[in-house]
Image (spheres, rainbow, N blue to C red):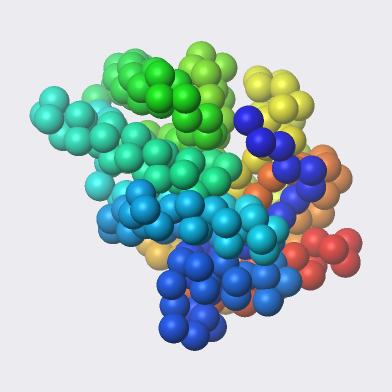
Length: 279
């Protein structure tokens, strides 16, 4: 798998300031802004065709922009109906195929809902589905990190322990750590240096230094309540102590990609990059 030698910052999708927005122009705008990464947003549909993907790859390489990908929201690997599970697997596989053709490094998705079932049962079902996905991609010669995301509500599969266990047990899998979701999932916890240090130590202990050298991270401000995530906010309109978070990431020499999911995507990506470089 491709390695990234430092921590890069980028946008969740085409920067808002892009004139005549297309994927290619978005990548070029990322470079104009002095950012280094862009997440292809396939959240409603896979919006890059097989024919267009090599062009996207060429533009990204020419502009030295690392691409990641967010698979569609309509995924539940724990759906009660088998056809919904199979459709979810296909969405992840198709996202990974197109992302790979675009030269992307990593594909992220919200894996499942608990649906009132025991966590252990849900874990087994999600693991089996992801093993199928990885096997199909490997058979096709596709190498890309498969990233179940740390989710923002207690009703959603994807706490830290579940993601570490999946990565231990399934090839090509590493977690996507969404620090806003983590903060919201636990109704305002995970907003201190000590909590973040313990989190990164747990990831390193469970998955080795490789995991910290290949992190796919989401950061934004977030509005939350007892049921978890409500909506994303701009960093400076939220209570997330992003400066201290970036300091901890720097102290641990975390490498990989930080994607801004704030409403002002490039504004907060630049804020984080400039803050990080000034620490």
